[in-house]
Every structure is written in C-alpha cells, then in structure tokens.
Image (cartoon, rainbow, N blue to C red; front, side, top):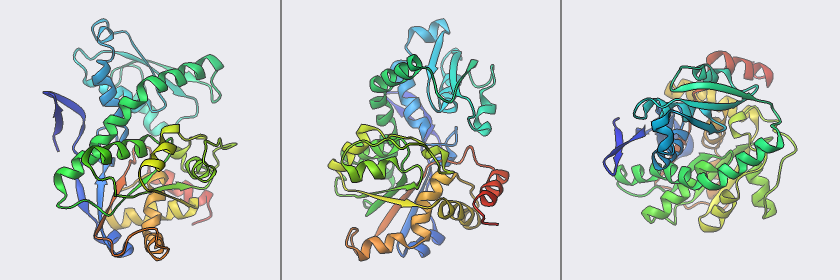
Length: 326
C-alpha cells in the first residue's frame, strides 16, 4: 500500500489493508473486517497521529532546517520514523521511559531512524518533566487525533456500506478519540464503538462508570500498551457524542486471543489488541446483542488491529507462563 497524499504531501503512514477474517467472522457470527494497523511502518496506528503532527508543525519548520529537534513522547518509535523521513533527515532528541519495551527501544539507538540522542527518563519523572509533558499534550494532541481520524476516512473509501460497529482497544484514549473524529467527519454518527480494555488497565471503563476521570492506583495488567492510569478527558467526552460500549476482559482472555489469532491469521499482536480480539472469540458480541446494546442482525463490524511491534514469540511464552496458561 502506498502512502497517502494530503495537499500534495506524502503522509508517513500507509493506507493499511482492510481484510475480511473468516475465523473471526465465524466466532462473532457476523462479517468481521480487520483494519491492519500492525503493518504500518512502525507497527502501530500511532504513526498516523505522530506523522500528522510532524507534518503540521513541520517539526517546527525552523527545527528541520537547523537539525535541532526535541521530542517528549511516550512512544518514541513513532516519533523517530517521521524524523527519519523528513527532508534533510532532521535529527532529534527522544525521551524514553526507563524499563520501556526493548523490542522498540532497540530502534532508538543514537543514529538510527533520525535519532541523534536518547535520554532515559525515570519511571516517575520529575515534576517539571511531567508538567512539560502535560503542556505539550494539551497543545498538540488534537493534531494527533486528526491523524488517527484518517483510519475512518480510509474505511469510507473502501467499504460498500458503513459498518454496524467498530471494535478497538483503549489505552490513553487517542485511538478512540481519533476514530470518533473520523466518524463525525464522514457522517457515521450512528456507528457504535466497542472499546476493549483489560482489568488492571481499565481507566476508561472506571471513568465512564463514574462520569468523571479516575486515576488507577497502578497498572497491573500485562497489556502495558493500555497502561494509562488516567484516560484522556477527550476520550470521556467521546462517549457523550457517539455510542461507546466499554468492555473489560481478563489478562488471560487477551493472551489466549493473541495466541488464537496467531493460529487463525498468522499475525502476532500485542495483548492490547488481544483485548479487542477476546470480545469476538468469547462471544461477547452476541451477548451485547442479546442485551439490546447492539443491533440485530449485524451486517459487518470492523476490528482495528492496533499493533504488534513490541510482541515476540518469546514474550508470548513468558506471558503464558506468567498467567499459568501453559
């Protein structure tokens, strides 16, 4: 798939494939399409938002020319790739959390993918760093969400009819907010979103239930990519604009779904994606229909395969051992 062009400029993400899954369709009792964000250049949907931000800011135009760019971002692999693709290969300084997943941190060695230097942040960053992160997020997250919205625009281009539901995983809420923005842009306001989390990383679920943001005491789930102690305020607002159904699964369900999906579709994904897969494999979709929370019959649903760049066969074995699934 070629990169998209917007206003004559190439995007950093690709138009990801949309494929029907026969095994998932059988499990769900309806036609299931997979939006394969795991084949993005960085292995995740996040390149959509980060790439859009880099284009809009021009990585701050002057920074590109001077080669002095700094990024404070919780997913540095997604930032480094756009730096690599920018004119002149502008170098950047990336900030990564200590204890981050080695599978993507190995790409962040100085000199790789546009990364000039890598700074390690402690697990509990200094207050000044946290304040800077929050300030940065408040200013630039709307641009990131607009990048994620392109996923829905692609669905509109290839589907004969709008889906009856979209399934996705929720961590900090960026993907959810972007998909809602896309649904609003294409006029699919009646398409419900089924948002999946794992217990121990379920900050969206508790916020939705409480009606306000709630901070989890800790992230105890193995689905570390869902590990936001507090979901974004925008994600909570989205549930007031479009029907969002929150579902939470056990870690074991998510990991079993990852393994079953590997057998079914020969793709290895992260437990975060496994949370959404588990809703289909466990019959939760049919249960939502029986409860009257989803329409009957369902013509088709779209499942966002959000990513798998940090997942390996060895890690899958370790997770199964950790959860007593071997």
